[in-house]
Image (cartoon, rainbow, N blue to C red; front, side, top):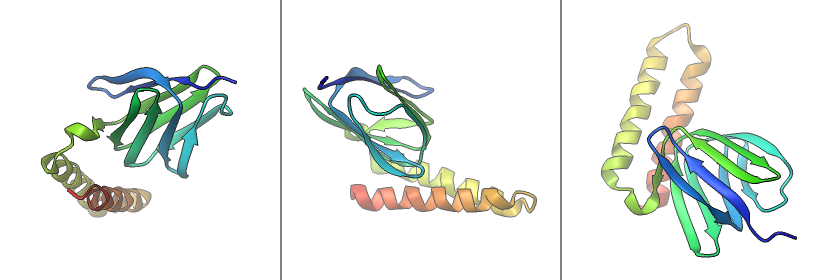
Length: 137
């Protein structure tokens, strides 16, 4: 049995990781999950949260704001809307993300034709605020 799998994390701004991983904890939109070598093929959307990568060299965490994760026989690819390594994360970054979520919520609320978007924007805002509490920033 293989003890590692290929893991790749990219965002529109840059490639953040390409390495062998033992396990990756994913903040899936339907719930958290852990991908490991020989995991069943899966495609899931991401919710805002912490993506945790356990590799032979150590553990690394990234804040992701959304995107997709695809698990295949070859490994795991994550295409994040935005991803920031936790060791680069600051209160200013988090405040910016929360402000963007608040603006999205206000826009959705003001647009009466977008009923489902209001709930989505409210959930995004709540997730971003919860991250700040979780990270103690």
